[in-house]
Length: 319
Image (cartoon, rainbow, N blue to C red; front, side):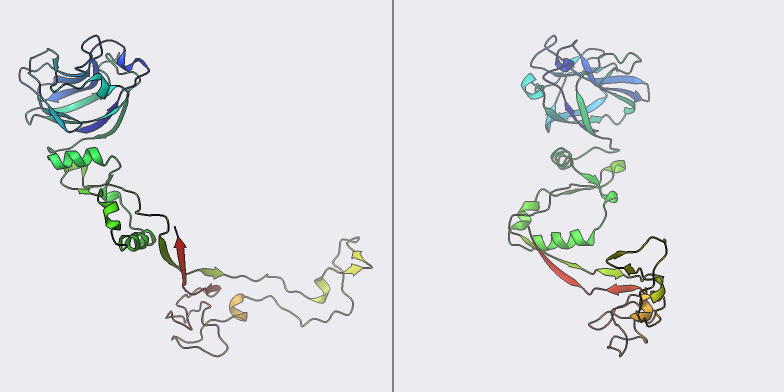
């Protein structure tokens, strides 16, 4: 398993009783216990981490802190310090990365974090912080351990989504000579057992002055009012002011109307009458139509009759 741990240089996490528990694992097949513990100045100021194992034979294969392999001399039920030592300066208020591997014969059935496995939460690490805990069904290689430490923002590959617009921007930026070097920290880690493949996430390689081209295709849906307008339903004036004294709409004397009727946008601006791409007389090729089949200079392939295709726009963005 891998995890990040940070203790505090202010609160009680470095100043309470000796032998605070980072994790307490109960292992199978014999329900034995093994703990990684943090020691304070009561125990040793410069040997901050130790292992306590109640099994006759050692249960941990390796403990690696910040990519440095630590060793210890196993002694049943006795706290033994790790070497090379992790000093107070390395621990005090800082994040540290851990890789812990169990022996093949002993696998953790239960892992309790930052305290002993007890109702009283004995030896708890008050004020400390735990992050990015990952469990694996296989041992990690040195390269995979480095990847897990370096790329804390990694994501399970299966959770990724492809966004065409972002992909287009990324490809344009990567075509700039030398820009690929800004992405050399990106890495894909595979073969992590139950954890699955992970891909590190890094920022887009954007620099001031970069230009990115984006193509968009706006589509506008129109609608007409559903009430026709005639001389009898126009609000009229009496003298110099609106006359609403009677609460009725006033007829405007002398107004001549064409007998307007409520209509639809597709009636006034009809789309294509026949399938095809060439222009047609008395139709609007960029209005949607059941007959729309092709997109081109004179036509759209949108079939929604009230929708106007606004062509394809090219937009250049200066970053």
